[in-house]
Image (cartoon, rainbow, N blue to C red; front, top):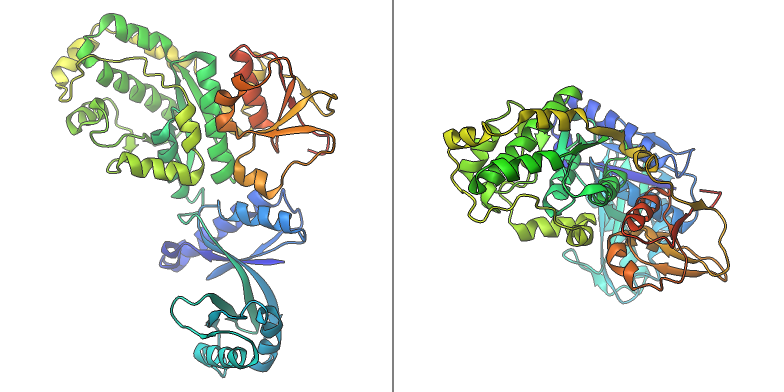
Length: 486
């Protein structure tokens, strides 16, 4: 089984050295992400496309591999293909005809050919020959060059040719790791998750910085969505999740700062802390989810005052996006429902917040602030590899993990719907409920508290995070199911 990987178009217009470097990085990323599914996976290609050859044969396994490929930055399209040696157009016809005879019955069609190399024929010659023969020898409704019911797609590369059996749209962007790392300020809501995704898509190795304003439950909730983002779109690279305890900073602001200036000063404190953390991590840019005028602290005058506290480059991918556009992206990448359900920890809410902060007034208010509290918050940060994100919490709370199921236990499959549909969990004589992780906190209270529930996901990470979250909420009837073969 083979996939042909089409490159993000911007890669193809780069200079030869840059293009080779980007393709090399993409090949490395594909191996890292996909070899856990197939340790014999082969990834080749240097210039115009990348070829992925797998020994997987089961449709569900191939579909899972295709899904992973479409989430790797740098890929424009992933084409499932059948490969053949190039001999003659007659031989090509004899291969194509049995595949499409039944499919073309009563349907309009066209033949599309892309060719690379030196041949005695043109792409148009192949299209006309195979199209004409299929039109005459099948029950097709006829050839239709614009918007046909079916496309017969063929790619010819030197002495080989490929029949495209399925086309999967890719993520686009640049390969992860081809650009410098960034530190993204993440709260778990729509804006910060989408801004983090956009930098990942652009090839920036995106680490996460979380300011804890709402306790352990808040931290767990944000870890859940950060892990989901990394696991789905950035798993080719190791990243860190940094938690900065900000309760003391908030207390200082609430007790010492004028009400109207609180929001701007809180953002300035966050930017200061993130800049110090980034410097320690040797990262030279921050990412925030701010958009112009979305809230009072995000007017241009306020953003200018906020930015003035640091020389670290601050990127704002959402700066000119509408809220509905941001939500649409969140829906597409799988974080919308999670963002809707996460509690909003505003911490600092001004009755009449300023929209045109004055530097001199802000500096005067900050003179009342004890900056040792901010320094202490940075010093007490916790930094963990997101791949091992549960370890930090297991040190504080042990979660029961079982590989066998008692008679009355109920399994809850919390995987994302895409994963669950590709490989449904089926167990005879066992009760299984499907509740995606982003609905779990709202749906779990509706379940029978007399029953015992086992959370399940592929790697056991999301299930352990959610089990800890539920225990923090007072539910003791929850554990994690992780089969031995996982």
